[in-house]
Amino acid sequence: MPTAPSPSRSRRRWAGFALFLLILAALALVAVPAFLIRPFSPQTPGGLAVAFALRRWAPLATVLALIAGLALAVSLWRGGRWWSRALVVLALIPLAGAAWLARFNIFERMFAPLGDSRFLPAAEANWVADGDMVLAVERNGEAAAYPVRQVAYHHIVQDVVGGVPVAVTY
Image: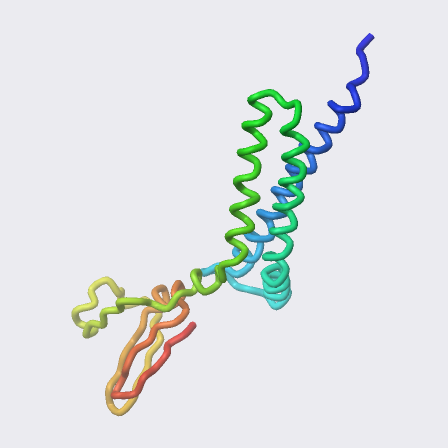
């Protein structure tokens, strides 16, 4: 007849499960907004609202998850074997990483303006096919075309066309 697990063993399992759930929640707070607002995919108003709400709460929530994770780690550390302690330390890494990443404005990094842009006459831009879609700007008799596939990734290109500064966005 099997014996029932001891209360401390059962408590350790629940603490480990709670730590696992904290890791998933903290990582979701960082990953879900980045997934909802990613380049090359259409965004919906509902998705944007969710992403910005999660971004607003992520810094506080991930720090609270890290504090709770540390408390669980201390309880799991006591009386644990060496491999159990190693797993506890490894479990704290994604929690700390999520708390750190939640402080970055990931949207600024995802949609960074095109830096170090080089502009060529159309005849020299052999990497742009005749069928490629472009955004065209004409100012004071000067024209410029920006390939949509380039603008779609960076979302903004800063240039001067006909002596007028322009910000091309998509």
